[in-house]
Length: 197
Ligand SMILES: [Zn+2]
Picture 1 (cartoon, rainbow, N blue to C red):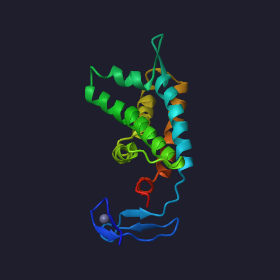
Picture 2: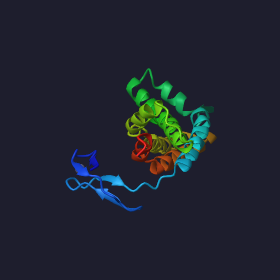
Picture 3: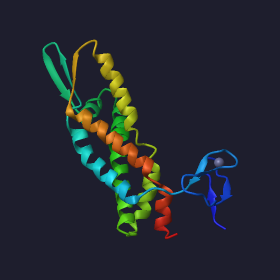
Picture 4: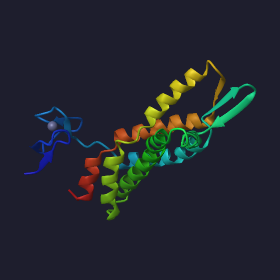
């Protein structure tokens, strides 16, 4: 008999057999602990590769130009976070980690694991990559950064002239690809593949 542990309340249950499109919920806390696998590794791999290509201009091109007192300044995500190191090192570190490092690392991990599944490879590294994916997935918060960025931009419009630059459009595309990739990705399916179940 195969068992499964609820990640929310640690209750051990018998692994149910479920039809595609259905989910199984924990009897104690009602948390979804098992769902029928419908994820396609080639779709996840394509989304991850596209996200990796888009993340380069998203992080390096300027997001916004600020025109104030005859001077125009441009900044990108990395410059903005690094500029805050002296004033607010913790904020700077959190922005760098949650908006740059975690989403990029997560995309690389998902591209690697779905690529392994697609090409039918089981390298030893896949075990560590899947563990890292389950940790880093909770720290990828690009959407939080984008919402706070838009709030700051709208507040600044009363003091200066603002122009959106190409980096912002790439960042929005990166966010959409990243979220689509996460919603398609199924960690349990990859573990089953690794364990050859
Ligand atoms: Zn539970």
